[in-house]
Structures are given as C-alpha cells and as structure tokens.
Image (cartoon, rainbow, N blue to C red; front, side):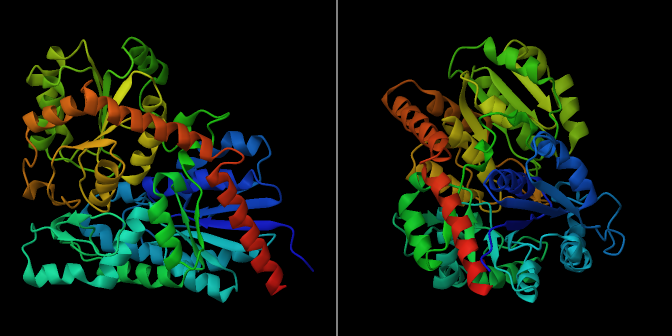
Length: 493
C-alpha cells in the first residue's frame, strides 16, 4: 500500500551552530502537507530551544522533541555539559565526542515510542552513528552538514586529490596551493584548512574519519544554501552525489513571514527593543555589526585590537562580546582604558547572545564583521549586508573565499591561519587594529568599488528572500526532497 504520511526524524549535533538550522529545517518540513517531524536531542538542549518551537507547536504544527538522556557522567563530563559551547575545557572534547556516540543506544531504547515510525532520518554529518542506525531500521539517512556546496566540493576535492598531503611533505604550512577541480581558481595554505587537513592539538581524527565514511554512504545531502548563490558548485556537487543534493536554504528565513526571528537559538541577552531604537537613530548602511559566533574565543590582546579598530573606524557599531577567552581581563580593559567613555555616543555593546537576524535585517547596518561561520554568512547574505571577513577555524577560511573571491560581497581583514579553539594564547595578536580599521573603511567606502559590493550584496539578499517562496528554487527543492523520500518508501512497501 502506498505511503502517504511522512515522518522525518531529525538528529542534530548538539551545538548552537548545528542545532539552530536543523530546528529551522524541522519547522520548514512540518509546514508541508502530510509531514510530521521529530527532533531527537538531549534534555538541556530541549529546554534551550523549546521556545523556538513554542508558537509553531501552539499553532498545530506537527513537530516535537524526543528526549535522549545525555551520558555526561558516564563519559567523564560535568553535569550540564550537553552542548559544544558548554565544554569547560578542550581536554574534555574527546569525552564529549564519546558521549555523542553513546546517544545511539539512547535512541534505540526510545525508538519504539515513535508513532508513526520515521520514514527518513536527517542527521548532522558528525552524528555518524545514525548511518548504522538507519541501516538497522531500513530507512534512508540524509546528511546535513550545515555548509555550502562550495565547502562540500572544496573538502571533497582536498580528500580525493590528497593535495594537502603534498603540502605536508613538500610545502611550508603557509605556502599557497590550488584546490584542483573547482570552477574557480581557489588557493589555500595548509594552515587555513579545517582540522581534517590541519589538525589541532586535540586529536579528533578518528571521529572525523567516521563522519567522512558515513557521509560517503548517505542516501543524499540537504544543504543550507540556495542554488542561485553558488550554481556552478551546486551542479558539480550534484554530480558527485548522483543528483541527490537538495539546497533548501536559507533556513534562517523559515519564519520570515510570521514569527520573531530573534527567537532563533538562545533568548537575547539584551532588550531587543532598546537595540532597535539605537539602530533607528542611525543613518542607513552606517553601522558596523561585529560578532564572532558562539564558539570563537578571542584572546584578550587580540580582542583589544579589534575594539581599537572599531573605534578608529569612526563608524557607529554594535559589538557582541561573548565566549571571551578571559572575560575578567576584557571587562577590566573596557572599564579602565576609557574605551567605553570614548565611544559611548556611537557604540552598543552586547555581552552574551544577540538577536543577530533582527540586527542584520535593520536598514542601518552596512557591514558585518564576522568570523565567517556558515550560519552567520548566510544570514548576512539574506539581509543583503556586505561582510568584513575574519575567519578563525573549521571551514571558515573556505567560506571567506566564497564571500570575498567568488561572490565579491566581502573584504578580508587578512587573517592568514587557523586559530584552533583552546589554542588562542599561542598566537597573541594576529591582526592589528589599523588593519581592522582599513578593512572596515574599504567595506564601508562609498566609491565605485564599495557601491558595487553593496549592490551585489543587496541583489543576493533579494534573491535569498525569494527562493524560499512558492516558485523559488529552495521551495521547489524541498518539494522534490519530500517526493523522493515518498517514492523511496513506496518502492519498499
């Protein structure tokens, strides 16, 4: 008998940058006819993100959480360490990853409670055990990496060409090389690559290799991007994945018609209306928004240089200070150096979680000084805001190449190598304040180059907001994804 009811089981990696877009995806899927969605995650993460779904659930949207107890004590972790941004020490990263793997047993124990049974699993790339779980229950597993096709293709070609291994033996870490097989000439140095290719002092190679092995066997891939943003790279990546690639983003726009976007992730640590009133007091495209995501921990000397660079730019700015490596030292500098007094008429400092989508969407914001995490990058694209790029680790240097070189909507501060989490003190100051100021001035310049960059950014923002609507490419891809899974299920029945 044909299957006409789809139940998607979503399993995010437990960290803000991974969980937030997958919760957006859950809402997007649940809005489709005959689709039910369950998000499997741990108790504290359910508490953390439940408010994001409250209005949707109240309105009758068929989306819910499935609680998976997190084996913190069993893995040698303190209680409450249930998210990547809550790991108190990098020495505990292996323990955290071991606990993540133990969630397979927790899901097995609760799988029978799911009714109807899931017809498809969509899981984070790094939840590699979900591949085995899906096979055991004879359902397809679709991978979600939360990245772009540009990133996927770069990493695939690095793996298959082994060009990075040549760098390990024949080139200095800071000597550039070309990634083969890409539509554009893209160069990196080895010390700009993700930890798969340029490892940190914390050995996660086995965990990452299992993710890679599971990725290759996945039924397909869901991408938080849109085809018009990177069409050539979408085409090439589809060739690698036998056509089973669905770009359904920007996921941050899933609630753009009716729900407060500030509810994505944590509750904002400031009065949102106060922030909006401050933005309202400034001219269009005049404000710099500086934020480095949930995991970046900038050391104190480098953070001071960032602050001084913002000050010297003479632009009004919103500066989000969170995940600071040594918070007390930073607060002492802010209080004793006279910085806040000097910039009091043109600064808005946020200590903690910021309503980023709301801020970026405000007409006064003219530039986003960002670490180039993909969620932040795509949110900036969606808002039509040019970027000042300062990548730190992971895939962020890859994202910078897309923003600055391929799309032409960003200006680099010139960061030249990865600063792995937990190793901040090894590096001291890598980017001086005057360099930060120059990058801001270039991004905000109202000459021909600056105006062209802003024009491209705004055009992409308009496209991004249209692709999720009926008739748009991402809306169509979501329909095609559901049809594919329905067809697959019917063939098995």
